[in-house]
Image 1 (cartoon, rainbow, N blue to C red):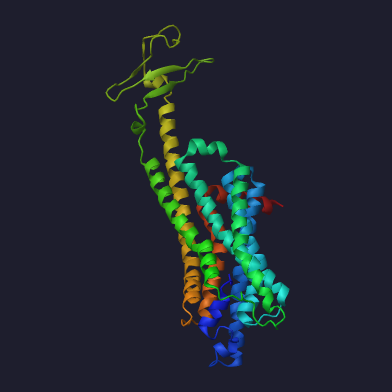
Image 2: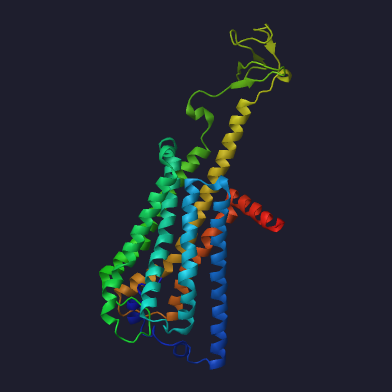
Length: 383
């Protein structure tokens, strides 16, 4: 994500130097070995990002169980991260290692716009996924009515509109230097207004939103996990009587904590004409109460799992992108501040790494994706 590299270049002083200038004490052989090693590492990261996101997309497409609005948002995030790994990261490898742009003006404009747009869209996708999760937990009944594929598509459209609006402005003033020989591919702007607009729109505002949403999701999820049946009102003590004979009727059994057995309620339909006679535990199957408790345990486990997954995604996002945006904002404001360009490259690639971490988190911590992955792998092995 190099939209602030112009201000970075001026502030860092030596940001436009070649690798040989930056690492002057090293001989050419050592430098060449370092470049090859860095290229290989970055290439492996890029390849892993392509494969992991492609697997997520393929899994969602081929698994009918995953065809839900929530998973459509995850699939859109994977598609965005896939675009980052295909259109942004390979060129960034060459530019990071060589420190010289050799692809021409048009390619530079395309690459910069793609970099800003896709990385911003990836970040904003995390926001809409958290927002979807927040509504699903706090307003489940009403939100379920409008939680459709069309609604998910509208949220995705908003993400792309915002991302494009952040990436477009630099193209309008880039043409002023289009006739000059191009050795660097950076956004030629010293305007602090765009620095604030781009960094806050792409990171700081989404981060604050994510933290607020995750905090509320965490509180809501914990309240649902630890809420007992009695908290909803009258304690549920009605069980379902399932008789062994064919065409059996359903009877209500009211039990209390001090009762040793259950008694059939008068007028409940009877059982072979013996209404009012005691029904012992070995003659009935009391299922409903246990099934309710079991469902609550399953739901609680799912809530914990989903909340934990979202928290890990939020933590990974902050760790990956915070250094880059902090440096970008500081260097855009403080013209006297300096930072080694190698450190800035590390921060840039740490941000790109988030596009690899996202699909890995979902496959490791989401049971549905994990099971779908395993089925997909087994299916491929059979053929």
